Amino acid sequence: MLDKNGIAKRIAQEVRNGWYVNLGIGIPTLVANHIPESIDVEFQSENGILGMGPFPVDGEEDSDLINAGKQTITAMPGAVYFDSATSFAMIRGRHVQLTVLGAMEVSTSGDIANWKIPGKMVKGMGGAMDLVASADNIIVAMMHTNRAGASKLLPACSLPLTGVGCVKRVVTNLAVLDIKDGAFHLVERAPGVSVEEIVQSTAGDLVVPDEVPKMSI
Amino acid sequence: MAISKVVSSAEEALQGVESGMTLMLGGFGLCGIPENCIEELVRIGVKDLTCISNNAGVDDFGLGKLLQKRQIIKMISSYVGENEEFERQMLSGELEVDLIPQGSLAERCRAGGAGVPAFFTPAGYGTEVAEGKEVRIFDGKPHILESALISDFAFVKAWKGDSAGNLVFKATARNFNPMMAMAGMITVAEVEELVPLGELDPNTIHTPGIFVQRIFVGEKYEKRIEQRTVRHA
Image (cartoon, rainbow over all chains, first blue to last red; front, side):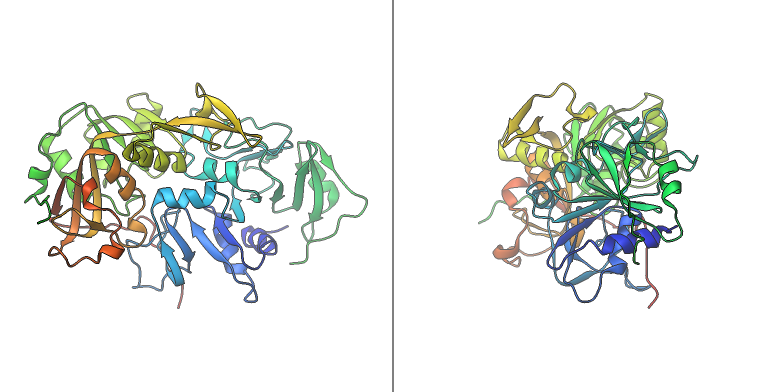
């Protein structure tokens, strides 16, 4: 079974040379730590920077330089700052090649819910709705089940949606799954995880091939 | 000679702000917020405000200060997750909240300032954001109609400005400030530094002074960091 860093490490393998990548808050942020030196990638943060660098060393924090999670960051050589309308022109205009974000629920039709639990938690969607509506390539990074042990991969989302029919790949602590033809398709299993365990933890229809390779991470 | 927009203080800059008005406030989280204008709004005690701002501050800073004093009746925002008082007022129904996607919020402000009454975007299609909105298909993909936003006053914060109202922002403190400056019927810019006319390079000005009606130097800037995150050297 993978921990959060393991999920991030597996997603980092999906990133290709020359891509602009938007990483959401939480597990997705960790993806930046696992990009191989051999490829050139620029990270976009929707609050207004392209070419985001690592967190600053102690004492170098700048209150004017943060990421979408409001964390202090640094800028790489060649970085650029811009306003929010320009930032979402990059996103809506499909100039960003990969979006990685977290989710509370994902469905077999590629719907995603991650912004609201009615009556309990209303934080808002931030940039998530813009991102999922326009990105060609969306990877969801999340735990396979919630804290109560219930599957987050469902026949249909029960929570208010963030976007419809947009998620094509999900990477969890248990598996890599693709979404197509109204079902989850098991692509890889995490080290130490059986196919049976993944089947048990997936509430939506799951297509399991004869051979399910183990992730190489 | 350039038209001078300079006023001496936040008090003078906020002349004409009344209860019941719609205000825009720049910033993302606590980054690039008009701290001095917010302090002045608290001081003059105007109420029943509709505030358009990406976030709602934290409990004791930024827009959180106006929420604590119950000066806001409606918020138009995209993300309000860092403010417990906000969440309490919203869930109890004391505060009306219109949550809209961040990119749509930015574009609605830009459109308001640019004289574009509405536009179609794919963001929010198939979600509760789309309820009651016109849907149209472009290139086989559904889009929803979003309307422009304008405000009685827009409060923005810049790094440097000149007497003509030209503004330069620093790093990610730019965020919503340029679009909101465009969309205010009266736009007030508070700056860290007011430089002599001619000192800003016209090639690198972010917001042209035509969008700014009043400019003043903020008395003090706390510039609080919401999530101080460092790496080990």
